[in-house]
Length: 281
Image 1: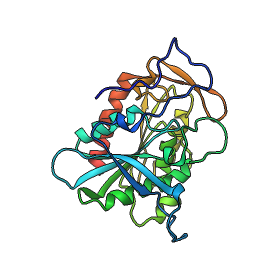
Image 2: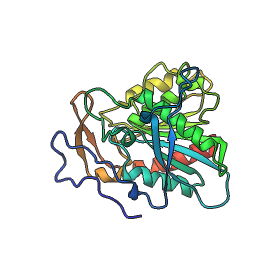
Image 3: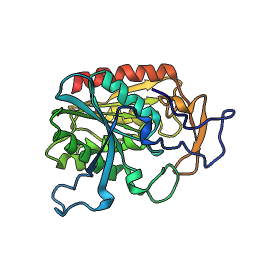
Image 4: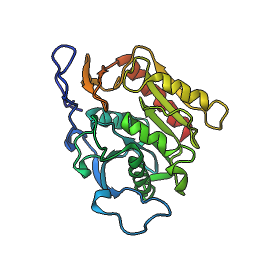
């Protein structure tokens, strides 16, 4: 697949305000654009969802006859990147269907990494994830009993929220069988009703690994202890080759954060994710 360069950097830093750009739909060769609605809150209004809840995504099936296990992919605060299509291809190679959910462009959002009102909050994006689950469950070539979820950063927070005990996810009759989150903000004190894997760099200065250690410790005596993979020397976005040798971008408080591609950590993550979903789906 031809790689689309998101940003070409000069030196090791970019000026404040420059963000990773969302890739166009053409970035994913062999993907179908599919449309569905964000899930309605169980027990809430039963009226047809409005236009603001109409979501689309990029779906790709693995080779061979179905029904296939499937994984929903939730992008971070910069929107869909080339790396998400690459991850979907790797999941396809491992036998999983992959649906990349676009929570931003259907709502006319480019990115929301900075401060201000979040037009698509992580908690709100849980409904996008469950909308994708409901869509996939109705497809004849998808195994409705074997659907997982992966989220990155902003999407990783949504992914963890989707299977948090006492959260929105518990209200849905159908749920994800397992969830993985890349460098999410880990809210300590949470427990989960499905298996969870978290992958984060030890040098992440945006979503601290220390919080994820505390989150894992709090789940040690629960049914689903968090499977935490700490990656030495890795930063935020360690699995995105397009950040290259390093860039700095501002986060929600205006503070600058360091992003750098780490090939060894990326390869570890690929192996970890494949094993996790093979065992948990």
